[in-house]
Every structure is written in C-alpha cells, then in structure tokens.
Image: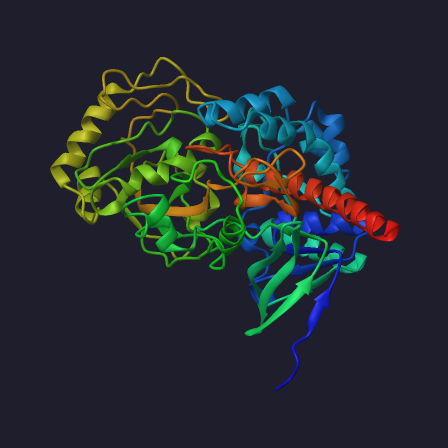
Length: 501
C-alpha cells in the first residue's frame, strides 16, 4: 500500500472562491506559506464567486476615488456618467436597514469602513473593475445615472474575478490542491493544527499553524436547507456551486465553534421555473418594471418597494410560499427594452401575446379570470401624476390595492405582452460561524479558537432576512484579507514562541 503524503505548511485555506483567495493572497504577501484546499475540480473552481456577475458594493466619496479603482476610465466615460457617491455611512445604513437592524454592528462597521481600501488592494493584485452600465444604470437625457449603491463589476464577471485571484495567488507561490475535500480539523486543547482531507478520493492530512475556513454555506445541501430553513426549502432550486454543502461549518461546530446569524434565512431570488439547478442565467430580476402574479392570478408582493438591489434576495422566499412554488412576471411593450440581459437567453420560460386575454391563455397554471381581474384592478389603480423614471424611486405608485406598488407603476395596456415563469432559487445561506473583528472563530464560551479563522458565506451575523446586492462579495474580500493578515501574524507569534523553547 502506498504511504500517504502528509503536507506541511504555515496556513491552510479551505475553499477557493473570492474570500478564500483574498485570504490566501493576503497571507502569502505577509510572508506565510499557504496551501489552498479546493473541493471542486479545477474546471469548477471558485465556489459561488464563479457564478456571480462580479458586481460588488463598496463605499466611495467621488469620481477621484473611483479612478483609483478603475484607472482606465476615460474622459468620455466621465462625461456621460453620473456615478454619484456612496459614503461609508450610507453603506452602513443600508446594512442595518435591509437586515432590519439585526446585522452585527461591529462586523458591519468593519465591512463598510474597509471596503474602499480593500477594493484598492484587489486592484493592486491585478483584479480589474469596470462600470456596470448594462444592469445598474439607465440613460436619461443622455446621461447614465447609477442607482442602488453598486456601480462596478470585475472584468469577466465572476469567472474573471476568480481567474484573476487564482493567477495572482499562483504568481505569489500559493499552492492550490483541487479535488481536495476537507473532512476534519486537526485540533487539541491548544487550538487548530491542520486539516484531514480527501485528495482525489484518498484520505491525507495537511499540518499547519493556522486554518482559514472560506468554503461557503450550505445552499447546495437540501437536507441542511430543510433542517434549518424549514419546509419546502428542499424544493428551492440551488444556484451557484454544487460543492457548497456545509462541511466547513460542520467541521468547526464539531470542535466547539459558536453558531451565529440567521440560520433560518438565506439569499433567495426569483428565477426561471424550469432551468436545472446550478445553471447560469437563472435569475429574472427586472420585476420592478412589471407585476408578479401567482397561480390564482393575484399579486402578492410590492414589486416597486425599493431598488432591485435591496429586494431581490428576499423575494424568492415569497415565491416559494405561493401555491405550487411558482409565479409569473408580466411586462408590456413600454418596458420591454428595460429588461435585463438574462431575459434574452435561449433557455427562458417565456410566453408572448398581442392581447392580455391571449396572454392569460398561455400562463401555465394560472387562473385566467383571476389574472384578468388583477390586471384590470391594477391598471385602474396606477397613479399617473408622476413621470416614470427607472433611475430613481420615482413615487409612481398604485392607490387602493391590497398589495401596493410603491414605485415604477405603469399600466399594462400596450402589446405585445411578455410573461416569464419563475420559481425560488437559493444562492447562499445566512447562518454560520461566529467570528470577531479579527476574523477569529469563536467557541461556545465566546473565546477565540487558536489558529482558526473564517471569511465569506460561512460567517454568520452579517445578513438577516435580506441582503444589499454586492455586499456578499465585498464581505468575502474584506474579511478574507483580514483573515490572511491576522493568521500570518498569529503564526509569526507561534514561531517566535517555538524558537524561545
């Protein structure tokens, strides 16, 4: 029998997405030797980060700061764009407001205050950013105006972000092992000393002075979803990586780590009813410009309650609660040109008709009379005294309906009409491990577990009920960088003690 290879290093990072690679790069540039364990094969590396658009939320004061993030911005770009500003205070307020003031204030403050410098740090490590003209700005009077606190994405989207981070890590000498599934933390009373993992199906170990957990939550584990989120969550479609099944969280809990955050909550969106799980192009997020109806033909949500960035992560749950766990998004010709790019894919469950009566016949599973009654009541209730403006919360609302539409309310009366069948998709889970502001994992006695750090989606306490778009990637970057830096400091202290004795 071949003797198994035991690896030795300073720091082990579990996971290989945005948070993990930021941790690995930060640790390496601070002098530590680093091995990254990636459960997925190389062709599927990067966890949920790979499946994002690479859109990220950060605080900035003005265009001069944005030039530091995007040095390729041209004078033409600046002349045709109103980037506005997004102060730290606004970011922090959004974190509090969107989570109904449940977010951990210390972690939220660290996230918002470190966001800009972390963006500059990533840019210095060859991650390139560009404005999100296609999804976060509409052209009005010749000017693109950004809205919703999120203005940039990584070049190449999520795959581009992951690729850039991996390339930088490789250039710095970080070793990444693929098909390497961590199964157990090596630990004793003095802390964590490494990881047991299966590499290409063979059990082995990596011994280290610190471990950084950044392997995501449990969105791809239907058993854990049902156990923690509740009934019907096994029916939600899993988006993102199929490898985020919760082992990182469970390994830490097994050695006494403290659970934290919204374990019954998750990032859930509305997306195509019939696309398979783990498929790109699932989400359908232009609902503020139309209406959403359930099987009874009734509206059940305020489609215009806020900018899409601030509502999309909770509306999937509301669709899951409807009869049959599905709904239809309905638009008319007035807004068809505003629909996001994912509505134009080939694999889209879409129906189109010249009249509302004809459309009603095509809405699979929807009560025709109920739908037409809803449309008539909705059209009658639209207040037309304010102009429609997709760049701002325009106050164009409905009056007198049981379910109000607060902004962007247009009558549905101009054919052809389009409708898209949607269901609930789960992106990531909100419950996870308790960390302090040094990203040290806390135990059930609220003390730091020596040598154990965490970042990314398996950290609990940041998001409750909902989530500001782009804050997840930013949190992964901020806390990943902090974890890498602090783990490096920790092992320096360990080495100094070892030399003393």
